[in-house]
Image (cartoon, rainbow, N blue to C red; front, side):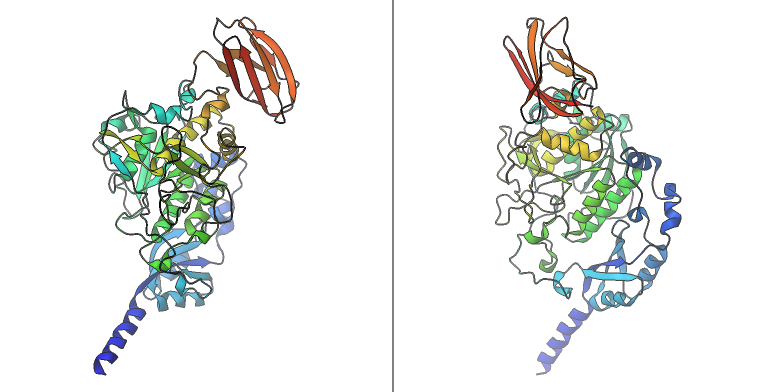
Length: 534
């Protein structure tokens, strides 16, 4: 009887003193107007310029959390503050269940939500077998066989952008990952280092500025965009600039990483970043009660997906790996890939066949996911020592895509993030018939430049595109004459004209602003594509 009583006390003590994570949300921001009156106190000029260019107004989500609220939470008994989000007006905290619950009584606290769903009064019960345990840093397999990166670029017709000198210049990409060791020393990254294209970074996990550390996953991810080693690896955006943020702790699987991700995304926004790419996915955690279920993959439930959606609303484009769970009992995309505006990138082989590990859709609320596909099987990458090999995973199809998004946006600098995102979807090979395995399919980045071949022919081009008054067709001299027809989206023939190499011009002044299709026919040469009338 004595031993039973002691055992009961031990269980009771464990329940009382065990540490739990939670988000504490606040009701308001008392300093709201004073910050809105001085936006430069919140955001850099580059961030403000990006918003102005896209007609995005400042609002309450841009304003920092009230400092006095943070101070009171920090001074509360047994509470540790681990992360903060101005976008969601919340702190990620840790403490005993009793101490955390006591915060509900503070007048400025809106609600407290435990990461362990079983502790929330309105929460659902989580079955132990409802999720499959996975690593948040998407697992990869590496094969150190030398090769070159041509196929992963040509599959997306990215060389059409590169050959017209759209290589990411002037665009800024934030990479949110698990670490970047070797980036400051390995040869494939020297092009970035020498040209000062690593603009900075931060280790949110350890709260220090040494971001050239941690897991090598982020190093390989960066190499697919910024790597440059002739005849071995050319990244999809070698001339873009980068911020490197560590948000993933590879040693544990804890919801704090979602909060650190949102905090990093907020930092990216404030610095004026154009594109966020992340090869991280969140579904299962070490504590079963904290794990997500498929029903959470609706774009509005998880902390990280809500943050990702806000990031898009600020004028950035957000890309996320779809996940590598295609072979598992729970094969669906994770967070933040489920967010409505996030471009969730799945993986295909070099033959354009879906990789069997690539997570599938739809989102729980039945939206198309993944959104688009790129090569994630046998993707050419660099390791921390500069060795060039291949790796498998949506971890790599995502940044391959992100680099070309930067190049496309460089080519169309006046476009908003929404317009660029839509251009990418519309250029994809399954746009008219998306499915749960491929989404909208494989984009053709050259199509937006009027180059519709997946392997660019330098002897054929359409320029300018978009056009205001006239477009010009460049084609081989041996095809002296050609027939060009312009169609509406409904297939109605609007313009038909014979052109020659000496007079290759076609007027589009009579067309209304919008998207049209063209066909180009010459002896032995047939081309189709899209033109945009502005």
